[in-house]
Image (tube, rainbow, N blue to C red; front, side, top):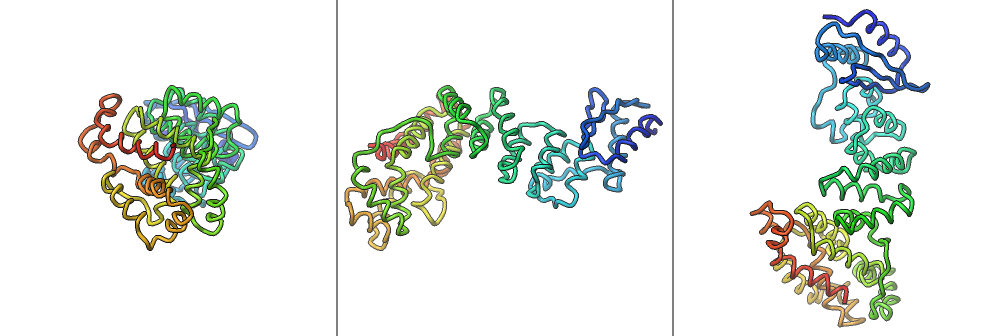
Length: 369
């Protein structure tokens, strides 16, 4: 079986003109090519079954681009960014969706290549992956990809993808203030939106909050300590500030009524990052009971210079510091005893979580009082 003479001629002419990317519409049997002059298309004239004919088309493209008809190797490493920039442009000429995905995952992706990838394969996962790279966020494609993801959000059903999308599109410079406010309002109906906000803009959440009375008295001193290198003082000042109070209020709201286990797990991961200054040795993997006991010892340790400096200024801050330490240990270890035994969601999941979540949220409430 061979390509029809007409198709062979037109495809060779197309390749001779050095296209920037190629995609194949299998349902309509059309090959599209992108060039600096625009887009061209070739309507195919199969000489056999469509599936077999498309295989021949891809073998021809592969032979031209890679020197072998075997096509693109669909290995998992291609989605881990392990591609050099030497052949990225070539991969976009294979008409293989998986090859376009591999380019999107490459750490060598450029704004121009992102434009070509997007032409070759408009896909929400591709957009998310490309927005993980600063050079794309800061390039011309950043706002375009973010706009697509926002428009696509009503069709996302998985909480994990919603949280991921919100965190990515809220990167600076991608959305205008009106869109940000609209996304925030959607969180009232689906609090997975809020989790993305908590991660992406923890110190600039929409809304207003009163400053804690104690913060008015301590802010200047805590700031001075922070400037001298006391990271705990900086964290405490952050938490007690109006923006910190909004973050805590929103965080508590999410965990009071999470929809599924993904929302709980991601929220705890975000909390661990937010309070990480209280745990410089890295993330914990412990139950709430273990974290609570360890936090008491941590606060009472006379050798803990950063804690001692704060308590020498105001000994009543001991409980707050202990809470910071507990919350810095947030993670799957807290809920493993429950989630390791059930895949429940909704009301049943929340009921099973009560023995852990109620005391955990009591710690959060201490920072709001």
